[in-house]
Length: 191
Image 1 (cartoon, helix red, strand yellow):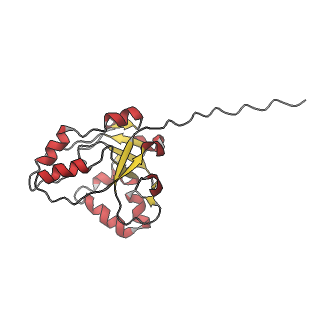
Image 2 (image 1 turned 135 degrees about the horizontal axis):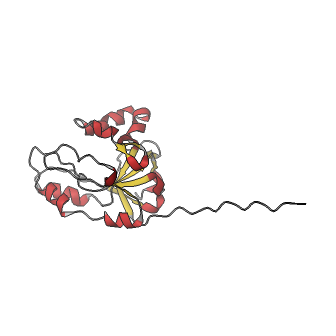
Image 3 (image 1 turned 180 degrees about the horizontal axis):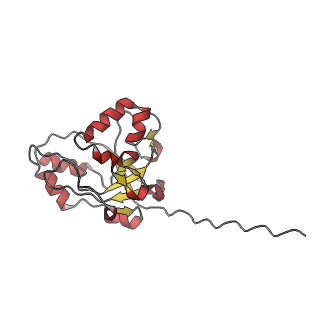
């Protein structure tokens, strides 16, 4: 007597996040993926050294745990919830020379939200790095949370407009970061 086929497990489609994210344009990309710093170390040591230099004096940041993604800071690709040109314009008004920056937009629906999170950021005036984070500084990446963090705060603009000559600029210091664990195909960006 034939048996009835087992029912297929129900598959819940992964939720799509609606919104736009940004990454500073890469002028001469190598390969087909945007790599986190830890992957650059192995695949492109010269690029690793150049990008790691941004952390001189704050090397501990690279080992900071990204709690919801169970990885280190150096294992993620950083995205912004805002077109960062407004941040650089604020820095220019402080008298800082700032090069023109091009941003690559990305439809957030292209990302698997299980590989992403939002890290709330803040900088204590005069510090050389953003304040350390804890579990309460992380949010899941959803349409609602992305909408909530997609505006530049007055605090961020005021800090950048009033930078002293010896203060580090840290343009994204007060802007929430969207963290993606692992590489991102360059094809997901609208260039």
